[in-house]
Length: 182
Length: 184
Image (cartoon, rainbow over all chains, first blue to last red; front, side):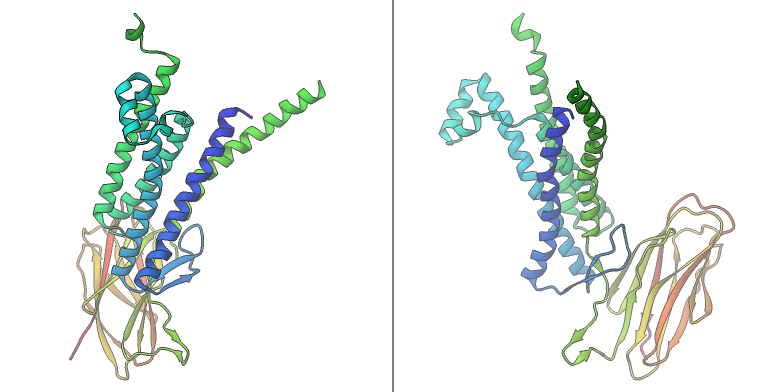
């Protein structure tokens, strides 16, 4: 089995669990905090037969919106962290000013070890894009507040740009920019 | 030599399984999250003294899956219920599905006004069936008919929605059904 496949499998487990945990915890925690009564039924309304029901349309929309937001943030925060960490690491190796700034903010740990690969960032981004697509779909169907759908679109766009930048950095390692050397 | 052959064979077998597993690791969370999306449905009002029985009209969505009727929803605003669904692309045929149950928990007869249809006429004959009685909601030319239905106290009614088309429909349509209790 190829190494890249092994690494891909290893790196996929955490975001997959985070996505499910973010959504399910979002539904149950929001319901518990606001005291909404929910019921778990088993109508066949999808691939799985288990469904979560709420009495009112407004409550359903609120819980769905908040759980979507929690899921989105639980994926967006680590993805952003990985992208920013890689960007700072790369910038620090080229620009001494960055090292000074990083030292000022007491984040030297971020630039001492390059343990973040493009594959890892891409997998987290892929999960974030899937989650964003689901949130946008819910927004279009009026099952989620529209501002959350817009936020999802914005986050996925920004992380997309970040992933692209990381890809450039990775390819520059293999094929260095010719202007630097000639 | 044997070990190498075994390694080659293991790679040959394991690699497709690993690819499948990787795909599943993306597909399963997606489906799970889609399924975790809560939906609106009247909850069973159960307490220690038994099932709650408020003197009111209860309108519940039946739910379930159907090849033509998708994304069913019911909203209630000021006592008026709005059932919405998307009628997907379909071949010429007659399709029907139980969509709503109405329970009259009141002590007296109640009259409800039911009307609905698609926004654009699509040549479909849309009817509803209540207690084996067929009521036309929207004619093929788009004309909508309103119906007043008398509900007997303590009785449960299941509304079936039926759509009949004589030619294939190549696009989706938004269907809306309004249910309003008439007060005297």
